[in-house]
Length: 224
Image 1 (spheres, rainbow, N blue to C red):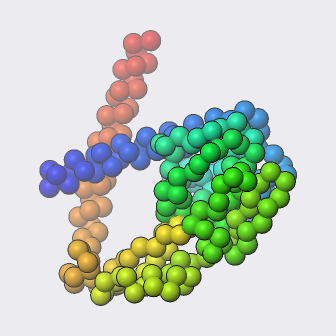
Image 2 (image 1 turned 45 degrees about the horizontal axis):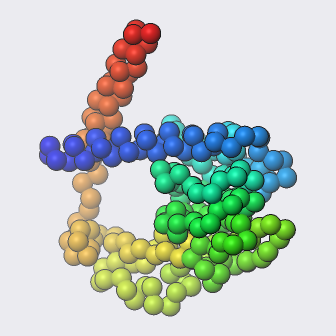
């Protein structure tokens, strides 16, 4: 039990750090989001979405998540390794930047991604076969329409162990998830995840962490 609480504590710390990193990347590039950009266009089509700096964000579970990121012409040569987008990301524009390489791990888990604009020297994540359309425009390579890796790669589903199913995990990535009624290592155990116990522990840790952060911030205010 103690080990689980410690793990959950550090998990929440990591979530808070990633949230700050996402906020920073939205404001890291000067200038406003271009009305002509694909990020701006798609943002207007998503109910409840709004623009923050160079991002299009929407609210999920009482926090903002990035669904569109436009770092066009920001003079960036590398990306902050602390920035990790979520499956909610739909559109990304990194074109017109002196990027020399882009870690393929950056796109891991981005199952909702449908449009990526990259500098001409950088290939589409996962390869051209992962996308419905790959084309070149002035100063950018456009990768559009992410395909389901389980359907696109004939042997992907065969690699999953018994009692599990292939599921997409971002451009060029797949994962094996346990079939309903199975869990654990290689999905060998039958049963269901103890969701009530996990939710109770998570709620307790969340409240404790919130109180700790509130007290810390008040102490800083008093010191000033």
